[in-house]
Image (cartoon, rainbow, N blue to C red; front, side, top):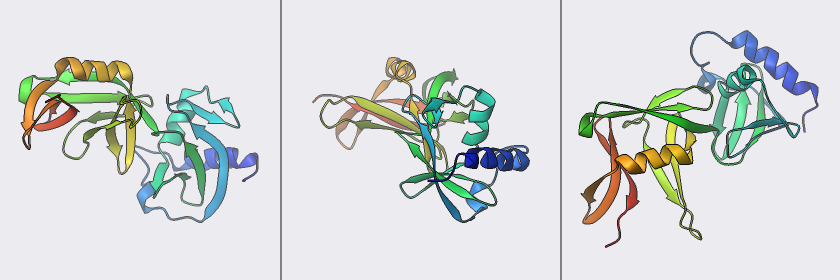
Length: 189
């Protein structure tokens, strides 16, 4: 476990590296410096040492340097990499804006850290069903291999606008965005 001062050191590095757009974390390969006591809860709340991080600008700053290496989530700067815990997905899609209609519509999702992502071929939607409860967990690819869990209210919006479509002999409910059809639920036979 990295010491208490590590988060402050990391924050100063992030602030120094911040510029326009997202930092090129995919190009940085610093040494791994251990895990810090930072966690992103399923609802998108960031915690440091068990306490919620209440300053949104700080959360946005940290969210700009998160990367997924295999099954591990890390915060990366040009000089160090530290491990953090993510309960489900690092982002939550909390708002949906619909532009256009029918097959030409674009679904623009806003995350809890104010990233805007249009569902398209590079940013697909997917739904995972819990094997025991059958409850759906919908996700949107935000960047690289980082996803946003789609908030329940936003998912209900998707369900309301869903249309039927046959895929490989099965009837699906799904939504259109940027010319792509995204299945969100299999209809009973």
